[in-house]
Length: 129
Ligand SMILES: [Zn+2]
Image (cartoon, rainbow, N blue to C red; front, side, top):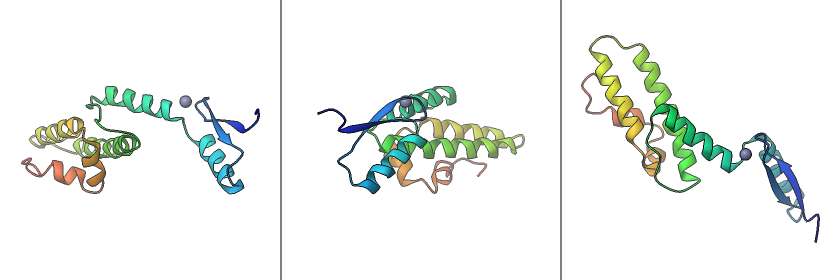
């Protein structure tokens, strides 16, 4: 049968079908989410692209864990870069090492477990911290 689904567009321009058989509130919620997000395919592409730009190792694991971990790693990388911006002389090596560890850590489970203390854990045995 035709028209069993409504085609809704993500802001990236890709469409996703939402079945009319969903309860009204779920249907409306799904439509809202689709309209305000990029599709999985574009999100994955964006993660891969920013990993390339940031020099980060690709995460090894499955969605949606990887997407969550990518967001946590990007936040940690941003924080570490900001900290490095305030560092002086001898501290810079320590921050470079921290940035290297952030980029190399590609276990998504680790990032999700350490979403609150990733920088502290990765910096643990670096001298300047
Ligand atoms: Zn898309």
